[in-house]
Image (cartoon, rainbow, N blue to C red; front, top):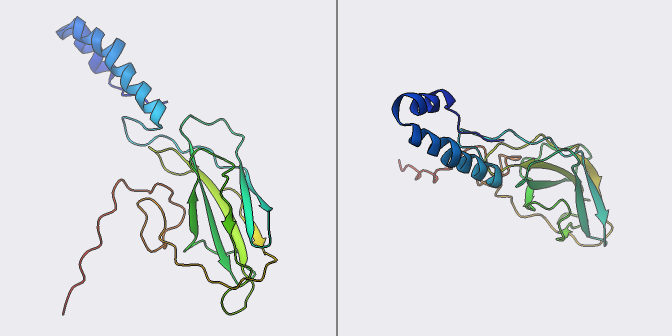
Length: 198
C-alpha cells in the first residue's frame, strides 16, 4: 500500500498553522494521492515493493512448432500486476543465461492467447532447445524474482529458422543484453550517444 507520509508535518499544520488546511489535506488530498497510487501500482514515494515471484510456467504444445504457456501465480497480489515471459533458444543442452531472450509482455493475463512460433531447428539444421521463465512487476516497482526455468523444450516440426535478435524490453538496453527487466530498472533510457569520429 502506498502512502505519502509526513504525518508529523500534517499535525503541525493542523495544530499550529491552519486547521482547515490540515483537515483538507488529511481527509481528501492525501487519501486521493494514496488511492491513485494503489490503483495504478505506483507509490508517491519511490518504488512499490516487488510482488512475489510466480511459482511456475506450464508449456503446452499445440502444434509441431507452436506452443502456449500459462503462468502459475497463486500468491496474494495487488491490482495492476503485469507479467513477462522470456524465451531463449540454444543448440547446446545446457541452461542459458537468457541474454538475448525474446520477451513477451502479456499484461495482467497469466494465460495469454497468443501462441509462440518455435522453429524446430536453426538454419544450420541444429535442434533448438527452448527455455522459458516468467516474472511479475508493478508499473511503479522493480520486477519480482523469476519463476523456475522450464526447459529444454524441443519441437517436432520441420522448419529450419534462426530467431531475429532481441531488442529487450522497457528501458533495458536495446540490444537484448539486459534480460529480466520488464518495464525497466530505470525511469529513463537515454538515446544512444553519437559515435565519435577520429
